[in-house]
Image 1 (tube, rainbow, N blue to C red):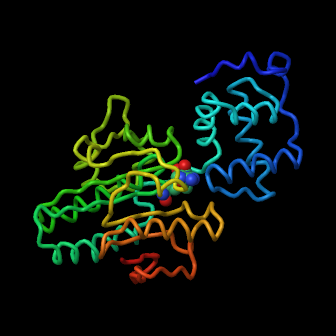
Image 2: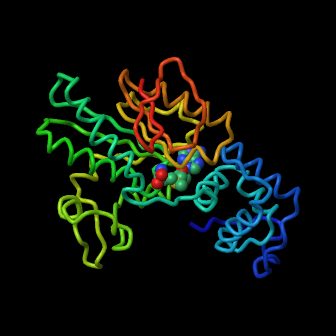
Length: 294
Ligand SMILES: C[S@@+](CC[C@H](N)C(=O)[O-])C[C@H]1O[C@@H](n2cnc3c(N)ncnc32)[C@H](O)[C@@H]1O
C-alpha cells in the first residue's frame, strides 16, 4: 500500500535521489525503535542489513531520507500502518517444511502416543501454538505430522493449531497455504497426496481440511501477556528467540510456560535458551531437541 506523503517536508525533492549513507546516530535511533517495538536487537554490524531493508521499503515509497521515513513511521495511524509493512522487511522469515525432523519425531513417536494413552477424554483435544510461524511451513508441518500419527493410532481427535507472527505479510501467505514445487520438495509423496492439491499454475495448496485447523493470528510476542491465547498442549517456538537478548528470551519463555496446560510440552530451538529454569517446568529429554514439560 502506498500512503499519501505529500505533506512530508522535502518529499518532492528527494523522490529521485539515491539513498544517503546512514550515520551512526541514525542507526542507533532505528535500532532503538526496532528493539522497543519488536524486541529484536540490532548489533552495530547489522547496519548494512538495516540500510538494505529500510532502503527497499523507502524506494517503494519514493523516500530517500532516513529521518523523514523515521518521522513518518512514528507518526499517527498512517505511521502505524506503515510500521506493519516495514516490520516484514526487517524480520527474517526463513523457514521450510519439516525443518526440524527431530521435533516432529519427538511429537510423533514419544509425546503424542503417551498423550493419547494418558487422556481418557474422547475426542482427544490437542491445542498447539506455533510462535513466530512465518509463512506457515512450521504449523502445517506440525499439523500433518500430528494428523498422520493420530490417524494411525486410530484415535478420535480434535486438533487446533494457533499460528502467530508479527508480520502480516507472512501470515497472509500462510493463510493461503500455497507453495512452490521447490518449497514442498522435502515432503514425502504420501503426505503430498493426503494434504495438498496441485493448482492450475503448478503450485501446491494445503487442503482446506488441514488449513481450517490452522488459525493464523497477528501477534507481537512481546505483547503476548495481553493476547487472547488460551492454554496449550504443545507450544513450538523455534528460530525466534535468537533475535532477542537473554533477558527477553527468559521473559518470553516464562510467558509461554504460563500458557501450557499441566503435562503440556514447550519446544524451543536447540541452543536458543541456555540454563533456563522455571518452577513449573522440567526438561523433556529427546535427542537434538530443547523441550520442556509442564
Ligand atoms: C526465522 S523465522 C522462524 C520461522 C519458523 N518458526 C521456523 O523455525 O521455521 C522468525 C519469525 O519470527 C517472526 N518474529 C520476529 N519478531 C517477532 C515478534 N516480536 N513477535 C512475533 N513474531 C516475531 C518473524 O516475522 C519471522 O517470521
